Image (cartoon, rainbow, N blue to C red; front, side, top):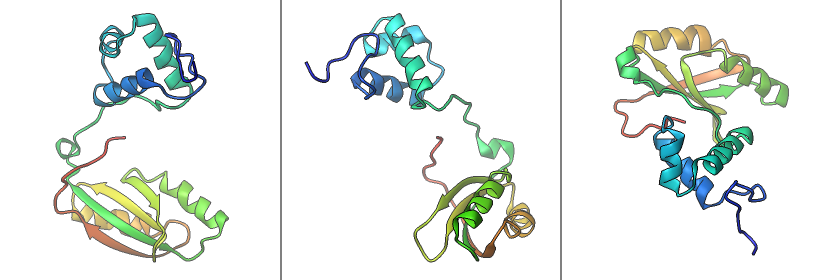
Length: 161
């Protein structure tokens, strides 16, 4: 029958209900032992391990990591920085992207379809540290013409991908 799957995960490359269950469960608890994961999705240990290995190998699962509490690390300040570039040809965009990757305070960087080119999420200890990062690092990124900053006053929900 079309769409049927084998217990070993042979499903032609698409995600079935077992794969999705694995992903949903591990997104909440990435440290779950394989035996408990298998029990929760309703398969035995071996096919669950095979599915997990495949999901890792094909890049569906990009990795496992500890999610740290930034406040406990003294990183309470979050700012969003709009960046307008002076040049938006592909070489300039690539130079900007590569340079952004070298600034640890930049947690996220998104190209935006707007009156500016990129939106950065920047996390620092306080406004003084942010000002230093903005002035010495962000403003000197390749092709930066201007920036505008928005300071977060409260975080209601935050992604941890």
